[in-house]
Image (cartoon, rainbow, N blue to C red):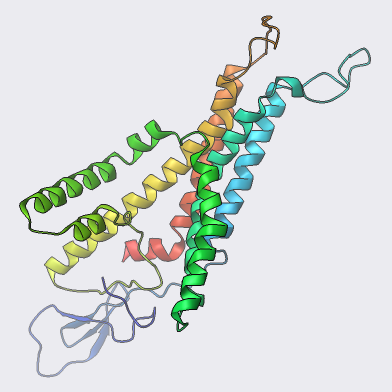
Length: 315
């Protein structure tokens, strides 16, 4: 893998398949490659360069709106009334007095954590772009504005709410968390032996999570070296597994927060302590949960694995 200057193959590599005769003609092979006197030129079929039509922030906002819509439909299904009947004593479509606003706001914050994270990264990139070639005073002012006005209130809003579904996160990203713990334990042992200082220990402890490959800066090399091929395949498989895990986590967490949790926290007592019956169709709720999970998973997997990425894996 290497960062190329452009996305098209300018000089395709060649692979020797036999001794080269003194003279010969040009013969096409069955797979579309060109054979020139025993030399096979390996050229991948040209795939149209389809540019991304939406950014990460726009996609996360779209998925968040879908999650909110699923949550609204779930509440409408659970707390609906028979207001359209002639002798119904309900004058509105939902039983609003049974809805817990604190739980609803908590679920909304949890559904929007990916949008919050993406917005955080967008603000960081924007401030870094503006601060380029500026004076020290301007850079310090931008940093104060970034954290005091935008990031600190945002993190306060998230941290003071309920924590994210930690158990589900640990189950899905167990290997990543275990790898972080092993790296920290190794770095801590080196610090205790005096091999590194405290600054290096902190830098290794707060290193960013594994990032996905940037499709605009990565290109298949068509190498004939087995070591390089295995290294390339290993890197692509690791990146593909990471994208699959993130897509699976997005689908499961969306269905869990939008469909399952509202059913769990249905009130079975009134404010006076009187038992009440709220009809919940478990079979229909299970089907809705599966549909929402598959839809969110398909949206996320389509975004993380576009046609250019699949073409890169095929090569």
